[in-house]
Length: 315
Ligand code: R5P
Image 1 (cartoon, protein in one colour):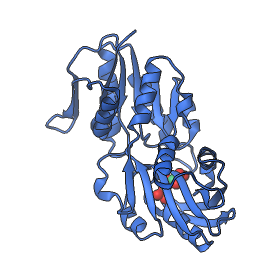
Image 2 (image 1 turned 90 degrees about the horizontal axis):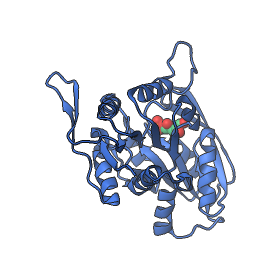
Image 3 (image 1 turned 30 degrees about the vertical axis):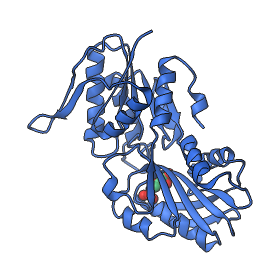
Image 4 (image 1 turned 90 degrees about the vertical axis):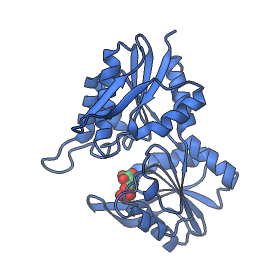
């Protein structure tokens, strides 16, 4: 069987080290830095001919992260790797997945095209904003959920959850499937939905809470926290409807704009995010905690390399 080897761009350096530790391997020796004019410079410093190569790189802003991923794929392809898997823990531009206004791009489709043209044979990602984005690719896409990692955290810190006390909440209708899966995984908990409206980009408004949340502890589950407004508004609405406490689980913590301030002032006991996004430490609110997604990605990498099913890792 071919060897499997791993490297990353600068967006996912810590995650690369954690995944390598988990798998007891060393990353491929490589350089990803800049020429003096600011252009990205990539070089693979060892032979990877015939190897299965996994490139770990989230594509959150700045766009240099996406560019690094594309250039690394190109370098790996030209170094005659056997299979190239783009492991994209946070798939940026995923929220621009349709033409919902005149004269706008479908950015998620363009990004998918770029990754394929660069030479990736497969994509592995986590909590893709919309699962349909898999269809923008003509190569296999495995979309893992952070749910098993969140469940582990809950069992460790809260024990088994009682369905009379806890309720899983989706902060918008689009997240219903995720909330349903999480509720099932936590022992058939009830679910509630927030009817959210977005009158303009980055401005969420809560319309209604659907479900009986009175006297319950709400577990909000979402894919992304960006400006923090969705979560802050959802928790306010839940407390107003009689919830005792709100806990949040979100896979990707972007924390842009004044998210830190908004979330620190929200009535939220704790916010759990994963380490799909790095370099955001200064923006993370005091009531938030980062947990590692590395074990999940490491297991998926191993299974992909061994041509084993990864679907059991999905939830
Ligand atoms: C929206 O559909 C997503 O699932 C998130 O709820 C959203 O991107 C969060 O954005 P923000 O934190 O800016 O409200």
